[in-house]
Amino acid sequence: IKSAAAQAVLSFHPSLLLPLSLSPSSLSSRQRALTVRHVKETEKELSRNFIVEVTIQRHFAFIEQAPLSWKMSQRWCRYQEIKKLKELMSATEKVRREKWIHEKTKKIRDHCERSGARDPEADL
Image 1 (tube, rainbow, N blue to C red):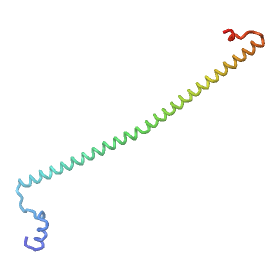
Image 2 (cartoon, rainbow, N blue to C red):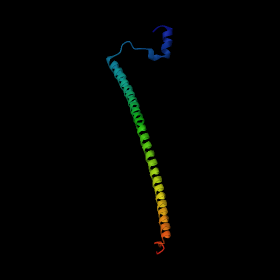
Image 3 (tube, rainbow, N blue to C red):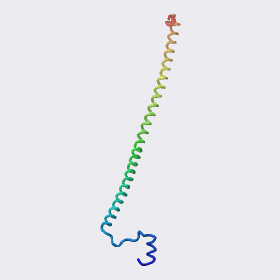
Image 4 (cartoon, rainbow, N blue to C red):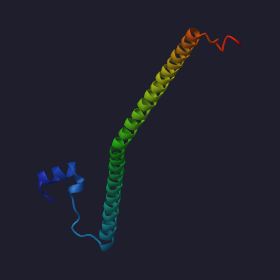
């Protein structure tokens, strides 16, 4: 290269100077290096794609599971509500039954007093 401009460019970028004649061994070693680099880049890309796919599948599984857990929590809340209502009804029924027994006992006592019979509980 004889021009001053070309020499100035090559002094800044020596990699721009390409050999005109390459031996077959240097071509094959360069080709091997290039192939190895492409293989490594492809493996990295496949690895990244695999990680992304796994992450997407995990997110889909979570999204599919969310309505199920919501339904289960809704059923659990209904179960707890029904349980509380049953306990309340049971307590109310117990109070009502005790009140009914007390009223019937009082009615029987009043009837016995009017008829002149003795109170069986007084004998005890």
